[in-house]
Amino acid sequence: MLRPLQIDPSKCFIAGSWVGALSGETLPLVNPSEGSTLCDIARGKSADIDAAVRAADAALAGTWGKATAAERGRMLASIGRAVLDHVDELAQLEAMDVGKPLSQARADVLALARYLEFYGGAADKVHGETIPYLDGYTVYTLREPHGVTGHIIPWNYPMQIIGRSVGAALAMGNACVLKPAEEACLTALAFAEIARQAGLPDGALNVVPGLGAEAGAALSAHPGVQHISFTGSVGVGKRIQQAVSANVVPVTLELGGKSPQVVFDDADIAAALPFLVNAGIQNAGQTCSASSRILVQRGVYDQVVEEMSGRYAQLRTGPALSDLDVGPLVSLRQKEIVDGFLAKSSDLQIVAQGQIVDDAPAGGAYVAPTLFAGVPPGHTLAQDEIFGPVQVIIPFADEAEAIAIANGTDFGLVASCWSENGARQMRMARALRAGQVFINNYGAGGGVELPFGGTGLSGHGREKGFEALYGFSVLKTVAALHH
Ligand code: ADP
Image (cartoon, rainbow, N blue to C red):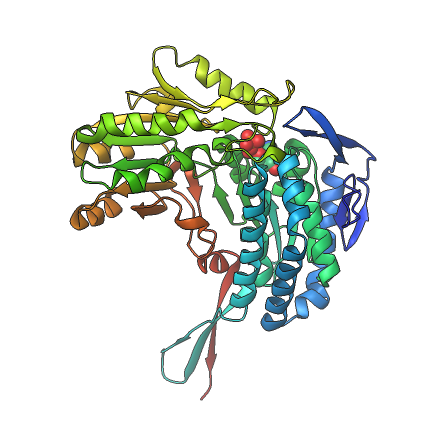
């Protein structure tokens, strides 16, 4: 039981009720800080997804479908307040489940509540327009929900991603089927219970845990789903895009990146330093928008390498509940992937590593934060998404070379430019290939209000901010002829 929410985590949440997977099967959920089993979760499959889609359809035909925009907004706002009432409990669950340090998990709860506050407030502020047209016509546009929306989310930021995708979808009047990741789904279940207790009508939100190849694949291919949003790996994103094409429904894909921070000679290095390091090691580097490449102009290169190394040497990695700088990776499988990258780096120079604390349990998925310098831009470590606490520093000579290196991967999610030269800031903002560009910061404090999404292998479509509300709705044009 997840107390005091009183949830049985081995259940799915469908049509407002907690029900076991129809097969009766479960999967073990592992605590990555220790390698021990936390609890069993439901192994949802296509029959459970089908039941969830039917429940969502029924919600659209019932109370939820009839709710006004203001009522939906008020509902989201109350769920957001209820989330805050459970801040400690949710933070603990997320920390144990994902392995993230407790204070980072707590920040995620606050972000979830903020998404609900934002989308609650925005629900009744999405207007259509009137369009001047031929004589005798009145033409206007309506924003309508897609219908049933599928949300396939990863394990790295479950609460934040629920906030940005389910929050926006519900604001626009969709009914949601959420497939959390098999590695971390406890806060998705807790969120469903919080929403139920806050009065969200049955079927407006359904949660079906399970394996990607089973529940996830069934959701993305389900003909009763009218929109899919997916956050996760490039490989799975491609499969999902193929699956939804059979039903010709829109899909939003957020697939990660290899995001650069570009530091020029004239940058305020002291201001940049915490961003340079934190953006790489936050959530143990398992962040789509992690900054895994630090590009540094030659005039300040030695200084930046030295000062980043100094910070790395101070980093401590240990169990999530010890709340150190870095937690374990989400799983031993993820650790194997990251170790695999490190094994391919014997030709590179490690300039600094953080430490794993002595009392970190032996079965945990720990990787010491590792900083490389002098990395050739074409090297695997500078090209591929590692999804671990690993950063590479790459020197550059001038602006043209910085742009070529920064844009020289298949990804394009986030980028930043550190410089005190205003004209350069503007040039870089235009030149960097990314869905978000930050000037003299990185991440802008999470940015619930700021549209987010990528280009290239980072995906397409935009979430967060007002933009998400357009993505989670369809435009209808009405042309009335009245002589
Ligand atoms: P990661 O590699 O970081 O674990 P994935 O892309 O594998 O990320 O997983 C993100 C989400 O996609 C998870 O909820 C997972 O269960 C789901 N998923 C994995 N494979 C598939 C698939 N073939 N179809 C649909 N969803 C999937």
